[in-house]
Length: 419
Image 1 (cartoon, rainbow, N blue to C red):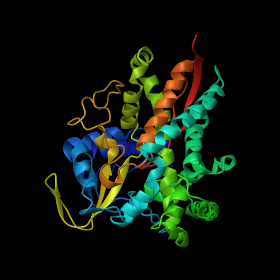
Image 2 (image 1 turned 180 degrees about the horizontal axis):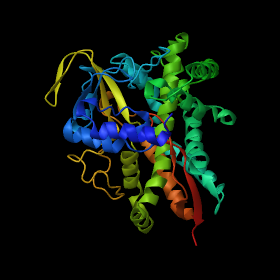
Image 3 (image 1 turned 60 degrees about the horizontal axis):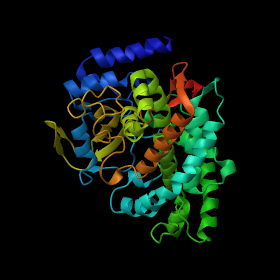
Image 4 (image 1 turned 90 degrees about the vertical axis):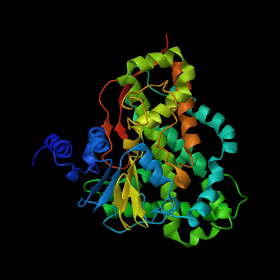
């Protein structure tokens, strides 16, 4: 067999030099080796509304430009989220329903029930708790030694936040990122050799654990965690009687609360090391942190795509998308659209209109916890600047193999204290 690098070169050559009609940006290896941006640049320039008649995920349209993505993402009457938001369908046909993969009115009912956990009124209460946890995590790190930032900071901080949002037993909190990884390890997003039986086993354990929590919360006064809110809402309290729908929404809330923040925390460290002039700019002016957070989220684009199904024929970019066609919005491409974002491949922490990106989506499915994610990142960088002169990248990252989650498993760093 050819080695991995040769396979990646073949994939890149086919997508960059082969006929445009055969370009397939869904190859997970492109994302694992950070080669996808070149492929999407070609699609934006040559065929921004691109149809691929044959792929491992069947025929699908790629929507690659910012404004076209907004058009599809905000037109819920024509483009349906059911039955799934990822490009493929799992080989085991296991697709538990979740509200992000539902259309109105059921989507609105279930989202509205969970929304108060991350509402603006809750943010002020969460901020002090997040800061305390950030400080504890940063103060426990080994200064001057090499360690994996992903494990020690990115995962730990988001895990503690998830435990709070679910009011999950703190001693068991590490089950949450594990279940998040299980949920996103699927052949439906290009993960080669995904063990779907293993996946089902652990997701069943997740369901059993949360079912016990649900029963407890249902018999207690309502609080503002996800489970209590769903268990007490008149329109969702019977979800416990539909285990697959409960599991689907658990997967959504766990992954949604984990991946955006976790991979942006890692991405920020990586980008600042690759752009030392921006790191110097940040140290000279910490007031840039909120703007930088938005730029990190744009540049990282933690979830690369979302899919829809056309409910009727629709004209877009001079092409006719037919009823029943699969339509994939590539957020990672929209965030690099030269016609909307000035010099989009540049990482600029003082970029004007930095929040003008598609990482959180648009319309009724816009990320519910976007403000919480931004707040975690802001607090983290405020506390980093208070303690460390810099976080030094001492090796290249190991990235996730997936066409859905653009993330990291390893980011070797060394901390330099402030003098």
